[in-house]
Length: 335
Image (cartoon, rainbow, N blue to C red):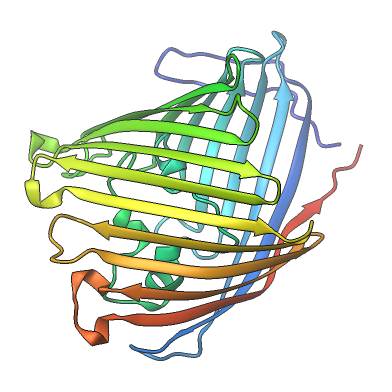
């Protein structure tokens, strides 16, 4: 097995050094997917796309019993970072929570729960918007201000289960050096102490340089699973110092697990960024079938009032077929 004899960390300028990590392991995992998509209006193309990524992870135990994990992910779809989709250092304090520093690609406490509604394949607004639509509001636009504005150089803490299913997470992003974000901080609480029930709330703020467009963000959600059925509803708001940038987002979903391998679902959402005359509405009906490490998925989607327009041309129907999605490729390590 490839071993890490020592792991050195410097955090928050306090020269926190963690040395003598024992019995470390290096692992390589990855996956690939092929998608075919199309729609009834707009620019046509061949419809095929492919995504793939490889993750390198190394871990080791320190003398005090804490565990350190260093992770790097290479993603062919990532731009502007040399294909480095995410990189992080994680310290598990063995009972006092997990502290993570994400150099790039981290998920804030609020960003991790921006839309947690049950779905068999894909979120309602991204089946059309993200892959095929040039006029609608995509998931990136919808959640650009929900959670921390930026995911580089992020500090993140997760408590794990504290008592009776309660969990707390928090994250902080210092200034990213741009004219947009001076700093951002958010927190989230989640309760899973009752069988089948998940209740969550998250709030945060992003401070713009000069205070010209500060935002306060909130989201709350409820999910309940009973047998093969899971239902959920979620509401999010973004309150900005610029009134025209106040966003409202509502989402709901339901899934039915037909068997251990087959799941069907329905997901819908509505969104307004404060400038739309009419809410953009998205919905999809989806199914996924799992065969070991491979998943086959399909979704039929509809987008109404694309970008807030009520014109007939802005009611769009589309589909996405993911005939190959293999995400469990792992290279074993040698002793």
